[in-house]
Amino acid sequence: MKTMTDDLQALSPLDGRYAREIDSLREHFSEFAYIRQRVRLEIAYLISLSRDAKLIRPFTTAELNLLGALSNDFSIGDARQVKNIEQTTRHDVKAIENFLSARLTSTTLADTVSRLHFALTSEDVNNIAQAIALQTSRSEVIIPALDKILESLATFIREHKSTPMLAHTHGQPAVPTTFGKELAVFYSRMKKQLAALKAHRFEAKLTGAVGNFNAAQSAAPQVDWFAFSENFIHGFGLKPNLVTTQILPYDNWVKYFNTLHLINSILLDLAQDMWRYTSDGYLKLRVVKNEVGSSTMPQKINPIDFENAEGNLGIANSLLEGYARKLPVSRLQRDLSDSTVRRTFGTALGHALVAYVSLTRGMERVEADESAMRSELEVHWEVVAEGAQTILRAAGVLQAYDQLKSLTRGQDITEESFKHWIENLQVDEKIKSKLRSLSPLSYVGLAEEIAGRALLEKT
Image 1 (cartoon, helix red, strand yellow):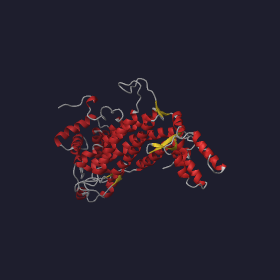
Image 2 (cartoon, helix red, strand yellow; image 1 turned 30 degrees about the horizontal axis):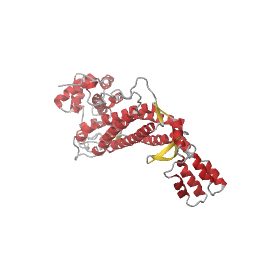
Image 3 (cartoon, rainbow, N blue to C red; image 1 turned 30 degrees about the vertical axis):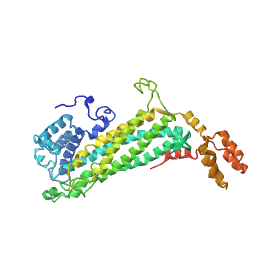
Image 4 (cartoon, rainbow, N blue to C red; image 1 turned 60 degrees about the vertical axis):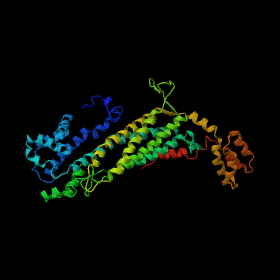
């Protein structure tokens, strides 16, 4: 049987091309990380059976140190042993139990081996392990990566909150805005959803084979299993769910994925807009020595980071959408179809992380071309028509909209022609003065103030 011996043989680009970008996620979602976390949970559970449920004699300091070392020093070699056992058991959690049993049998803890995995179902261990992975990856990987994007946006907003730019609606010239204010919209959207992502509390369950504590209650009815379950799960910073089948209802996890999906959609919107601003010449790509933009066109510098972000966000969101469809649905008290789906969490988050890294790098490699933005505005004097007709309407001029429509719709309006139109109006001089003050460069409303407010906005 052929096995991968080099990253160039990787089936997934996450383990090949993008291995460096997603390396931080291996600590949470690799097969090794999953095995290690479940070993640690089985050990923590054994200690809790002694300390909290009083179903095992008290452990000595030396025994607690032994268990601590087994948990903390779990190695790749140990994980290989578990996988070798699984070749026989064809059951991953039973393989972990057998591994621990073998390790403890030759120690003073041999008398506790029968209490390993006591009254548990595999899903009690699996769901807690994966909830921990989701929780720790959020704080250690996902949020820091998203914070970098926010920082990049904030830098652009501060530098360009007053930089006038032509806005487009329906792909056509609309009215002026500022570049900073347009990025402030993304910044504000991101902050709100990031706050929701940070506030999310992951649920987990420890309730037995079909969620009723059947085995635990029959073997040890003197224990308050509700309190035991809650305390054990709280110990990992998770939220207990005591009303379950054999599996945790994944509604709570799906809520997290949906928030992440929305964040990714916002960033997809940002990536596409930054790509378009680059295409329109509003942004300039920095030249990086020795990089190549095309195998045949030497002059090319391409916005590949925004394009890469867009592609990976699409893949990530496809998986997140799949979780929202699949995970809330299970036949009766459980089927196994959720298990293989849950093993792809690292894949979804991996593609999202590649996108976040690409987007951050893309933001660092562009700079606003203020002169290009000004030049574009100066040839579109028709964009002040909105302001002109509103000034006239405020002055009581009838059919002001129609007047401006006739003047500007489909017409090439210059500063000269616009000023000439003003002088021929039959209106008060004060009104003409207001109209003369209009220009594509200054008609930006409260864009600068809006950008500043976004930076100060609290969520």
